[in-house]
Amino acid sequence: MQNRFSLGILVTVAVAALALGTVAGAISGGLIAYYVSPSSSSTPVSVATNLNAPAGTATATSVSSTPTATATKTAEVTPLPSDPNDAASVADIVERVSNAVVTVVNEQQAQGFLGGGDLQPAGTGTGFIIDDQGHVVTNNHVVEGSQEIQVIFADGTEQKATLVGTDSFADLAVVKFDGPVPATIQLGDSDNLRPGDRVIAIGSALGDFTNTVTEGIVSALNRTLQTESGHNMENMLQHDAPINPGNSGGPLLNLLGQVVGVNTAAVREAEPGVSAEGLGFAIPSNTVKDITTQIIQNGKVVRPYLGITYESLTPRAAKASNLSIDHGVIVTDVSAGSPADQSGIQKNDVITKIDDQEIDSDHPLENVLFHHKVGDKVTLEVYRASNGKTFTLTVTLATSPDNT
View 1: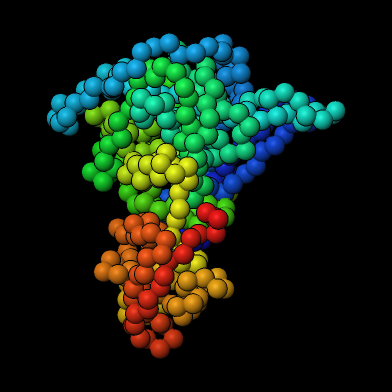
View 2: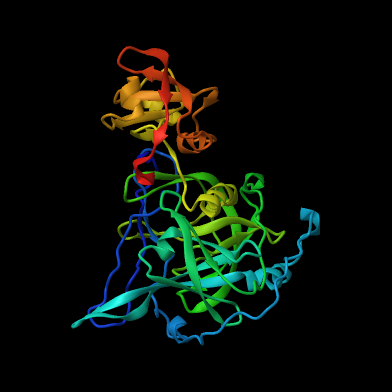
């Protein structure tokens, strides 16, 4: 399903500078307007950058010059406190989890004047190891277009990794390496986060400054970020821990040393000429759990599909339009032949509920749909503004065209 966002400030995320290698004539990269709306109002929002660093962007030792070797440390499970009141210091947490944070290098074939060249680092990001099988979580835009993937461990050793699967919608990917696992990080419960909670970010800033540690607080919950393809990343965490290109895919940790988010984007400019500070965004860990479990089990994520684009209905927008409802999503387009089209959904309808679950800021449409399966029959409660009537429709969810 594709969605359109409703936000308060204009945001465009410059994403995925993949393939900005140094081989002559070898630029294969792109910009994806990724994730960046720091509010949930109906106006477009700011300019943000993804956190995927072009290879060799800093003057420190380049990732491509890191010695190649196999990690030799023995696997260990990171011990974690069980009570927030027993939380360790930031330094203790970093010491405990650093060996589970890796640099992820996207390698692509450089195209020279005489044709294909050698594989070269096209971009770098960050990842973290989640189990003793060597599964590493990172962003989809970090590995997108890769022909080979390398992971570099905290001690500088390097290992080839294979791509298990990706989900472009959630901007998540899982890669896997063979061999000894130096450490793992536990995924925490992002639903327990509150604005003001302290968080720690670890990542390969600019691709070269590996395991850079920064600290901040959770600034807000349930943010919506729009992608260039038109769909929304919903329920995102906003925080102010400084993050830079190269932090993409890196962990955002709570004070128990658990991952509560995956860093993905940062707002750099609120509008042309107006800079922004301290606006970082992360995918919440509970979303990460759902997505990565499917990727590891099935190699992909199969999403149920309605066949609409939409924008969220806010109380403010409802009041401005003199609507009798103040929640739901406004249908802005219906794909021909889609489940929504077959059920009778029309442009400008407002979907207020799926089965017994209201659609609101705490329960975004995409999140509610994700708890259903392809083939499920669901009941939609629909408000039709043209006649002011509310009615229900039954829809059979199909497979998203992105999964075919």
